[in-house]
Image 1: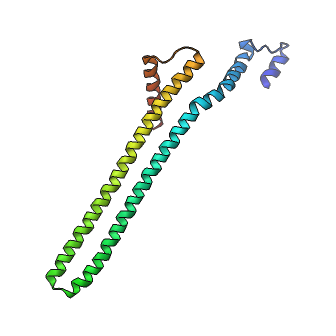
Image 2 (image 1 turned 135 degrees about the horizontal axis):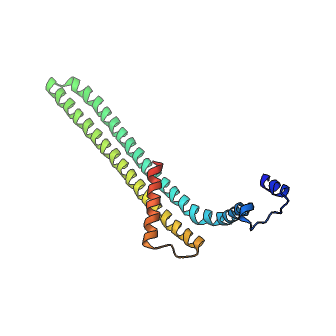
Image 3 (image 1 turned 90 degrees about the vertical axis):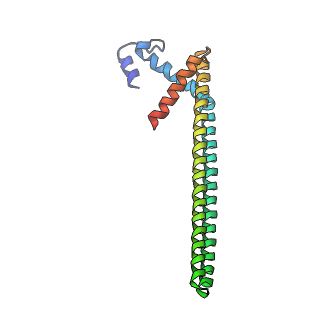
Length: 179
């Protein structure tokens, strides 16, 4: 608004093709607003979809890890119940039988802990692998979408190996910068 007042006070009329008098700003906004729906549909839609899929995979992996943890807890509870029964029977037996039962109990608890730890670690590894795959897929999709969008905007083919390498480097650089 101030730009238009300043131009009016100078005695001149606003010419949208005069780049020195504000026409540049006007055309920049017109082009941006015209391209915004295209960018939103072509670029943001697939990126959002890929992020949602990645989140779904992560949620499944977390649920599997929680299930494994619950099963380990149940196994631990079962071992503790067996321990209570073993202790009641061990009180009636000789000292040697009591020692054997306690040794067996310890082995079962350790085996259950090792199994639970292994399951949790495997779930974590699976989550990390899925995250890495999702990030890689998203990067590749962003490169392809960027090249497609650039081709449409520039109205020329932007898909050469050199262009792909440049966009891949930019995407990788942005990922490193955001971390």
